Length: 401
Image (cartoon, rainbow, N blue to C red; front, side, top):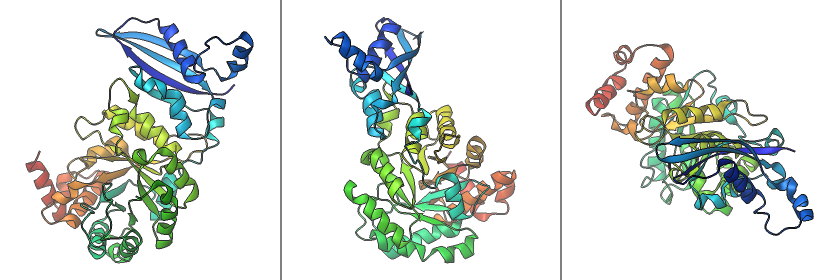
């Protein structure tokens, strides 16, 4: 029998029998319980019952902790994240101090998922960039700009050297810069910007609206010229990401809005390497934006690197996704970020580029120059001597450290 193996961490102040607790959890989550069922009915249910694979109890201060690995028969699941989360974590999410720390999917189960349509290689083909990390920037604020102003701000980012320029994830009221008109206006600026930067730039509009309208809206966006879209996955639900990836010829950038309630709590929820590194990829995210380890008190450094590993490693038929750390990615520390995450990464700069005294174009130029120096091993100081944008940016950042 094939299984999905889930590892849990139970935290309790009371002593419990580890083996008994694991068995209770396996039965409760898979079949609900034996109750007063006859022996014959129990035999019929046996193929659906989860099994305990491993149990490791230990103490941490006054608290007892138990690592439990439980195998769930794949026949319990539909091929959707809704069935995965409902079965492996549904009822215990509000009754126990228990956290999902890992999920291992059986290859036969993964065969039913497309995963990212484009993935790392497909996005690189669109850009014609094959051997270096990508730079993504954010138009902030996106709200309040008319279409022409929006396109002009996109141009500044593209001319500064950004590979990908996205809408702000909180940009919902686009009455002044409507979806298709905004896409068309930004795309008209691409060729002009490329003559300045020497790089091709893709515009990524925020895909928003009623959930039942998103697929058709994305298709209209593709007709208007968009190659990819930003999606606030958790507020909308994983299922729409999966459907978008399967039905729309575009790449999708998953934004971590609302994810803190899922991964940040110490004793409940789902660990970030599972949430971002496995579930987002499985559901079709080509680029997964998540908090960088350089933003204080958001995510552990080791977890951020594990997310990246999960997104890029070989995983049956599922294309690898780009990890895209966001938060405090600036000219001052992008060299460290590059050393940590390497080439197969999209580095996302948001408000950082707007701190430049000469505006957003110079802010992007400074970040691009700093990243290029990281690739060649040239020091920031030496690089700054040949880049006035970088020199001025470093002065601002060092003054605000």
